[in-house]
Image (tube, rainbow, N blue to C red; front, side, top):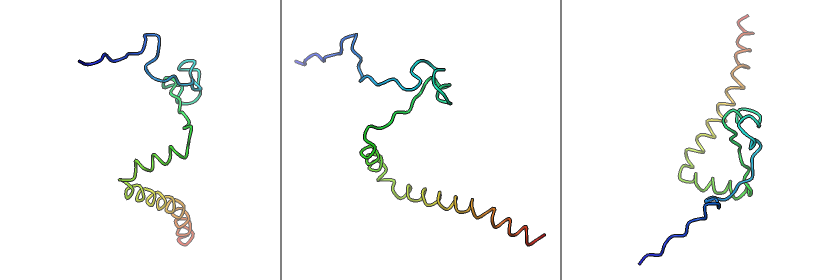
Length: 95
């Protein structure tokens, strides 16, 4: 014989209550692009070290891809800085 499952009372929320974000008054109460999207607010993690460690553990199987993305990002920034400098020097040589 199975036992009946307990359900929350109608006046109790099924999920934990959250503190209102900066745009809790309505869609136009906040500022920036998030205000136009219905008041979506970003929440700060309560424990940043634990949250970041958990993200790194989730990304562990893709660590080679993550390292590659970081290396390509560094390479892109390097070329974005050096490109105009080299182009300026080449232009000076031509003229």
